[in-house]
Image (cartoon, rainbow, N blue to C red):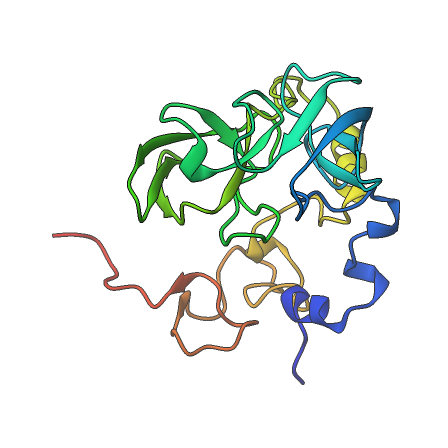
Length: 234
């Protein structure tokens, strides 16, 4: 009889593996319209690793965005081309000087920001041309962006989040529960058969091959996925 492992069980969409988004403050994204606003609140959201700030604009709209390091309630935030290159402001990449630290970068103009959103992270503009802007991401890799893609200036706050150790398994458990993540994480051999293809059995011996073909179904694609070579190098 077949078994639905965890990765397949998640697709059912019930509350067991659903993130408790009703507890989150909301999604963070760049406002679609150019405007000037004021930071009215700095808040914590369980769904984000970085502190968030609520910005009220002169148009009457409000937005949630990631709070850069050094911002405070009452600071001014400007959205749009021609804005001053100061922390918190949002500009197109073509208007940002080389060497500037940025975050929450758009992959496509107007999508609100997709990259560099974790606490303490930042990217850097390294080169610009008329057709492309090159940015170094936190992974040290360079990526090309369309010049009209927008980004926020500054380093996201909360850089010391990973410095404090959890100390206790219970503390880590509460952190993972806030986003409904599986905890603790163990190797596939230690799981039950319903949780992993390598599960079940009374020994640490895999009962099936660890090589998975590229065409394997999602539940079976574990271990070495379509490796180019196996065995010891001679």
